[in-house]
Image (cartoon, rainbow, N blue to C red; front, side, top):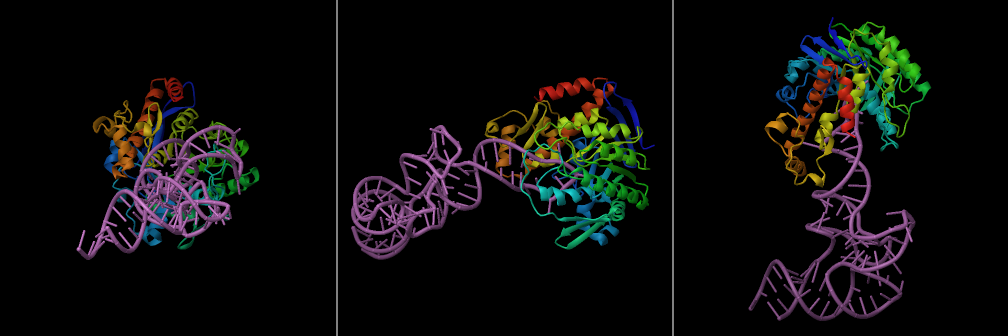
Length: 388
RNA sequence: GCGGCGGUGGUAGAGUGGUCAAUUACAUCAGACUGUAAAUCUGACGGCCUUGCGCCUACGCAGGUUCGAAACCUGCCCGCCGCA
């Protein structure tokens, strides 16, 4: 068994576990740091170790586009290429079906909290029942379950994902039903296509619809996957309502207890507590690195936008409670970090990414400890309260 | 002293009779970002408010021409270049 549940929380579905992979263990609940192009932006493998990073997720679509089939055939594998000896996973390229497709066309993300859509752009994706055509400068690139698995086997991560079609929060029931049929078919094809002994996760979809989510959880959960992931859109109503991830309440109870559960692409602080409480074991999200590069620093009381004039002469640490190298060793002040950003010094994005990645890994660590000590509910209440 | 060129909003730099409170860039300020085509994107950026295709004050200074001027004319001030 690759996954062991060590303890279950009494007051929620939270659980403490350990995920054993050929490249070591991942303690859960855990954060998966995003390294799309086989590299976590700004951070070296050594930095990643210092930030307590346990596992990284790279991307099938982007690496396929960068390497080509020929490049993949002679690829030595992500572990060697990245010089990362610890656990790795790869996304299937399924997310790009959404991010380069309807997400662009509708100007929308997958979490339905925005009142109005952003700028819309050309949909670069054409979806068929068998697979997906990506419109690129090199012409149409066809990706389907079989190809995705082939690529992921060449990449050689410990955990790989089934090919899927995430839907947008704006898609109606009928579209979601059709897309879900595709995702389920592709799940079977993904399972069938696999020839390696990598761990393959199936992906639950179903959009914002309870019966579709439940049906998907039952269908994917009953298949011979090594783990389960939950993907797609979240947020019950489009426009201003608070997200409560009730989709997880519809899904998790129908998933097998003994397999790891991954929540795809979700990872704000509140979301993590919510997800853990609802029974999720691992999360991945670009927020620590992307927002870091953009000057958003995560701190114990909440996020700060270091660009603000307010921090110009702030000699205080980014987060006085933080024990990361940037805060505790380099003693980086808010004012100094702000100046580095203003000067467009590359050190800025590095320091911010480092701190943020540490922050999230550390937060998961605190959550694990809390579950172990039967105070997860208390920690969650405290953390959410102090963030206002 | 003579001749030439030029003085525009925080900066650089467009505009050369009306649609100009003034293109653009940078700076500044604010916001966004959730399986990364994001070291990105959006908005504000003279003042005021009842936020209107509103009202005031504005393109070195002063006057003038004109229905109307940042733009044309005159004088002055300042800067750069050339000749003395």
